[in-house]
Image (cartoon, rainbow, N blue to C red; front, side):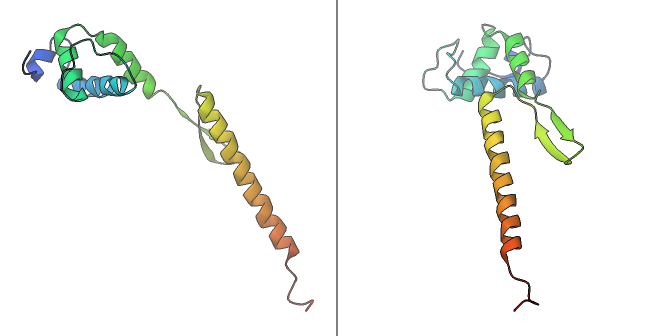
Length: 124
């Protein structure tokens, strides 16, 4: 297929908007190391993703599922602190979140200690 057009891909997707979302997800997959289902050649990954969709060899339902799952992390608001936290199953993100929380707690403790150590102006 020398040139891929929107009309080549429409039998496999519902609309041009969905085509854009699915192609962008497939490019992320290809950037992440997924093997292309069509010959890559010297084409850029966006062209490869569109060619994959137009060929019918790509499991579009799976790419659609990956796209939806990538946006499923939902924010949870903690009423006590009124902070925004993101729920995630990724252990790396949990570790980073814990380190950030600890560093924020350490910074708060330092500010509190500094304010206790400063002499009052009346005592001088």
